[in-house]
Image 1: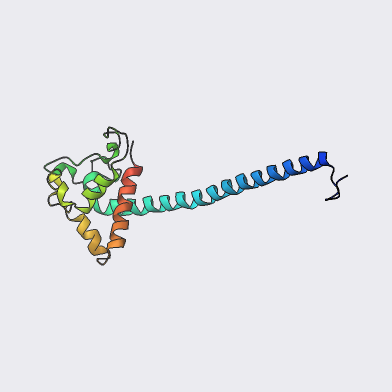
Image 2: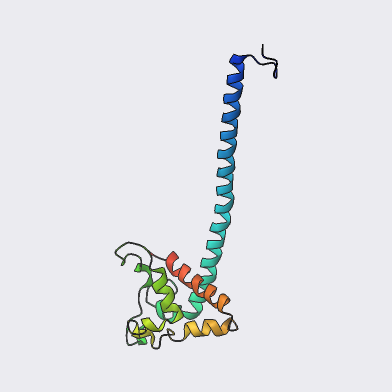
Length: 159
């Protein structure tokens, strides 16, 4: 019998294998719980962002695009051009990915998009991007977050 911990050479190997298995199981368990622990707040944060984005969307966009983004808002019929149905943006992309940056640029009022999206008048998409900035007391990070949340909502309504 080996004098260390009262094990024989035969049982010593089993003890070492069991210890390695226990360490591996512990590592997998920690990784799994770490992943779950961070996945849940992320989903909760995503839900909060979408909810906040929907509130701003209803305030600024729904009169033309409709509350569900289908292009059928209460003033849509009186407009020169029919508002876009925002629920099919992802389907229209060749790669099947939501055009996040392009939508963000349109909502913010990127001047480069003024040429392609004339129905929104000036690049500020009838000044909603500008109004969001002003409503955020000109605080860029708050305004950009609000606009990102609007885009998150639009992404969430894709069919």
